Length: 333
Image 1 (cartoon, rainbow, N blue to C red):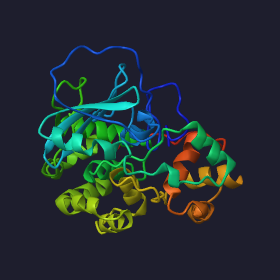
Image 2: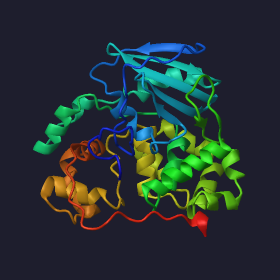
Image 3: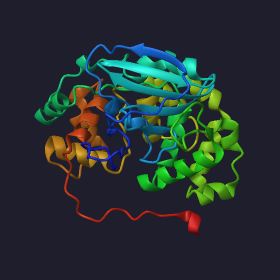
Image 4: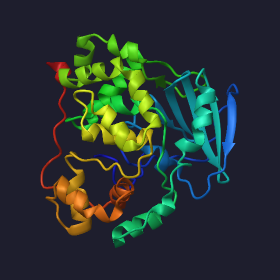
């Protein structure tokens, strides 16, 4: 859950969180790539929009640099690509490198929330209205890529975020490929589906990934093409297709389509902390379960994920009653 609340003065983020994008430090000149600009139709906070795509502060596929740029390394339908995007005077300026550069630039508006409609959201609680007022640049990203959100979501099943981030970092750096272009150091594109399928069992173990999660990823990459086709479906239909794969349930499918589809209504169920946070914020009930959470979010039907994001960003959470869960590492066994 780290990073899902109001942003702290650090560059750390997580699901639904916020990336602190520094500004004012120039970068050295680099070889030019393909370029594109896009003017958003309203306020845009680059850190809030792209924050959910970052899997921990050391994610090798994501980097926020001191010049105010956000870098992403992605495996597109046309091949690996690196994208750099920054806001200058309210206009998004993007540059891309690699075989997937053109695809990433074509996808830029959707990735920055062009298909999202924040005006369709009507706050029903004072806390939610205040959070929305303080975060006018929040838009829901749509990457158009399923597997790059699905695999790290599977790694996050039933473990702490630290364990999941470590596994993602180790596996991408070891089996992925160096990001094209002048990307910041140690940025990598995630492995291709066939490469995921060929990772030896002991490498999963060294990364701290148990057999259940590893097997789920292996089943998913075997039908990668079918899963990527879900981008053309409605979010509910896409979730149903993902859940056909054994080991992928409502939690994992929702976490995936929130990013791949920009699904405003795909609220995460089955989460350890989210029901208690929503229950505490909206009704003072820290022991709320999924049914209570869904009942409280019913007034936001069609926009329940956005409502949950705003609640998390409000920083309103029940006080801790126990120490943080201890991080495990099966790789040491």
